[in-house]
Structures are given as C-alpha cells and as structure tokens.
Length: 502
Image (spheres, rainbow, N blue to C red):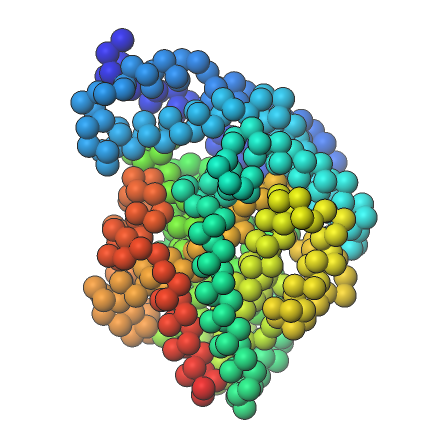
C-alpha cells in the first residue's frame, strides 16, 4: 500500500466517522432543547448505540495499518502540512481509542445521558440526594477511563488532555496560584472603594421576546451568520456545531435580569464564530477542527467580555437597547456600563463578573483534582464547595442548586473541562492585546460599529489554523510569547481600576 493510498483511505474513513458523530451532535442539541419529556430514555439508548458504533470505527485495526503505511512518508516531512497535522491527530486519537474498552464507551454514553436528564429535573427542586447516585456512577466511569488512557503523574491529566492537548495539572497549579493572588488583591481593593454601581437597573422588566430579538440583532451586527445557525432557549446555555453551515447557539432568559440572556448569547456566539470560521474544506479532519477547549473559550470570553462589556460596545448599542427595553428609560450610558461590569462576589459561575470568575473555576478545579486523587468523596462535595466559596469569594450557598449542582458539566462527564475556562481568559487577554498592537484601539472601532476587522483578524490568526498548532504553540505563534497570566491581570487591573477609582 502506498502512503498516498493509505492517506486517502484514512481521509475517507475518518470523514464518514465524522458524519456519524455529527448526527450525535444533532441528537444532543435536540435533547437539551426540543425533546419531549418522555423521550429521554429512548435517547439514552440511541446515544449508547451510537457510542458503540463510533468506538468500533475509531478502533478499527485498519486505521493502525494505514497509519503504519504512512510512517516516514514524504507526505509528512513538513510537520505543519495539512496531511502531517491530520495524521498526527488521527494517530493520537487512535492510540487513545484503542485503550478504551467498548463496554466502557457505551456505559459512559448512556450514563451521562441519563445523568444530564436527571440533573435538569433535579436541580430546580434541589434534589442532591437523588442526583448523587448518578454523579457517583459517572465519576466511577471517568476514573476507569483515566486509568485506561494512562498518565504519568495524575489521573486527572488523562482527562484534562482530552480538552487541552499537552496540558497537565502541575502547570495549572502555579497558574491558578498566580491568578488567585492577583485577583484576591484586586477584589480587596474594589471592596474598599467608595464606588458602588447601581445594579438595580439590570433587574427591571426585560420581556423574553424582546431579549431574543435584541440578541439576534447583536449576533448579526457582530458577524455570526444566522443563515448558518440558530438561537434557541435552554436550561444551560451551550453552542454545538453540527457541521458546515449548521452551528447552533442556545441561551436562557430571565425577564427580571438583563445579563443572563444577552451576555450568555454573546458568550455562545464567540464559540459559534470560531466554528463558523474553521476551514470548511477541511471539515471532518483535525485541520478543520478547533484545537482545544481553552482556545475555544478564549473566543467566547473575548466576545462576551473584552468586546461585549467594553464601553465602546455600549456606546454603539445602548441607544438601541433603550429603544428595545422601555424599562431602561432614564438610565445613562455611564451608569449602565458600570452596572454590567459591577464586581459582586456571587454564587453563580455563569453570571460572575470578570474579576471573580476565575475564582469560581479555581473551586471546581481543586474539587475535581481532589476527587481524582482520592482526597475527597462525592458525598463530601457540598461541604467542600461551600467552604471554598466562603474562603475565596466570601459567600456560601444555602442550597444545592446554586452550589454543587449549578453546572451541567459533571452530569455530562466533563471532568477536566473547567480549567479550560480560565485558560480561555488567559489566552483571550493575550490575543486581544496583540490584535490591538496590529489593528489599533479596538474600543474606538467598536463604538463606530466596526467589528469586522477584529473578527477577520481572529479568523486569519486563529480560526483558519484549525488544529495545526497545539494551544501553547498557537498562542506563542500569534502573540510572540508563551501563554501568561500577566496580560489578563493587567487588563483587569486597568479596567476595574478605572471603574472603581482605585
């Protein structure tokens, strides 16, 4: 078999697998948006059947034969060529897949589907006792998965690597320590400030249908293609890519709170813009896929915060917001800008301000690491959660739904995912600073309604690269430096120092 034939066989086979997986993405979107209540049990079995099929394909011995035929091929001489990138990532995925027993892959798919369904119903009624058995089952399976995948130092690393290639807990620990020190110092200074934004303006009446209409106006103005996607309500916001021309967003609206629906939409739009910006000609291959969840989060956090919470953004859109929402009549731009950026330690991660957000992630990272080190049991999670929230943020939950049950991630088996939110914030600040070096002051452009230059920059420098470079290499290639918390801390101190007259 020639290397060219082997590569073509791999390309055809892996693209067909990607088409099957995209049907699973469609089913996942449906489960969290449109499915009838009585359809969940059948959907869990559908996911189990699809997981079995996908596992069989991903462990097909022919993949190993085709990869072996490509060893030393001239096709792979340039490690950054499309072919070399695809083969590198296909080999990595295959070596991982063959370590996972089919039985485990199927059990995980079914267990997480059932756990997510139960979580959606259990969280509103604060049913931790009922949810705990589902969580314990998922956690046990994820521990088994980590052991099957293998690791050098931490079982947690095996799962973290799924979302952020090459990242290890030992690298995250000093990063979080640096951020914790810098953020708690900034938070203490803000608490000592006499400035107190009036956040009551965000808790007036905002009809859901008007929020949805305004959110869609923002999507179109910022560059998200609504003809290649859609926006729907859900219990926990997410973005999901079905394939080229079909990248879907979800959000949730509260009629008495402005931020959740609008900034939630901007966050998911950032994910959607990344997916819509990936090279469609490479769909179904690693060259056409996002490189990591950290880089993905850099895009969502950029559009939610560095763009969406900037003064320039609201200089452009606040007049329109006052037209859409009569309840904002009499509110000035300065007061509104201060309100949407108010720093208020709170219980809910997705509603957290920029200063405290990464402290929410630190809690989750420490708890996950303790679970996988055997230092903490699932039964002990609520108390450990409350203790850390009290220590880091000065608040503690009075119930489970706003505490240990607030996120969907653990029910979905996404252990190792949470640190990518903080990595995304770190990457976002570093990317944004480089974009301003090359494009000039971006807030001034936003105030003029000019968002395309920045979006084009991110597409050229980040989106179009797909998985050509791993995250740390991509950050260094784009910015000239390895990832650093410095730029995030500088940005936060500059912005909130001005807002709070520090």
